[in-house]
Image (cartoon, rainbow, N blue to C red; front, top):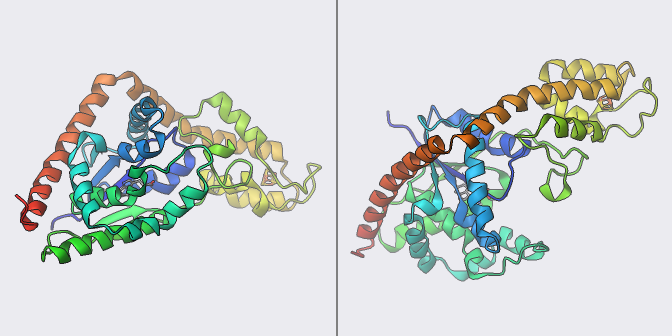
Length: 328
Ligand code: TRP
Ligand code: SF4
């Protein structure tokens, strides 16, 4: 039986944190064996907002790749590639641009939100409007059956299906595959201050966090404000430390839950337990990450190999699409 094709991607916009891992990479890793997977460093998408500092996109792409490898994406099992190294993406993006009505893009909820929240980066440029169109090209180019994404990406997936349907309809073909979404099971992780995890709030923990700064961050985490003395009865359900225990210290979470409620564990001890468990999780990732950061040649080879495999599929499919368009 041939494996189904999966494509997903991530924009290289900065250091990856625990939320990125739980929201995406963890699920990607779980799919490597059962699907024919393509994982894309979506650097053209990043450039749409980070055009003021293209060098940062290059650096972040490299860095993200090292983290992907460190957490366990395996280039023997999946194709890891960089979007801008496979120019076929731009070619299909252009073809899609000709058949995407402006209204679809202007009405896209993620676009409308970005226009409102553009406090730091000015994204009112020509390319950014076409963001979902490029994403549709990413997906169609590999004839992906499924796309694992978070809920925030559903409007883009819907638009992808619409563009693909329009292509197939206009050129009277079924060459393009309408992809389904895999709404991945995501363990939601709040920021260390209990608010939504976001780099702009400074409440994230990085996947490659140094031990010393990890310690500082855990110590600063917001606990149940009603607990003043060690033996006060606590409410773990409102405590951000506890929400992390549930994910990174599963074995002890139930016990901590009871002890907190009965006032038999103090927050200092509780945080110490979390710190140890988080560090056990992060340390091997950090070590592998540093290994890849130092082994430039090895990483170059992995990327070149991934790019080559991606390009092979992409160029074959693009030829097929142009043939169906009767556009030689
Ligand atoms: N827009 C996606 C995000 O921000 C990243 C992305 C780019 C993507 N191309 C993709 C995701 C193709 C899935 C499929 O998360
Ligand atoms: Fe939070 Fe742990 Fe303190 Fe309870 S004991 S309030 S779970 S840090």
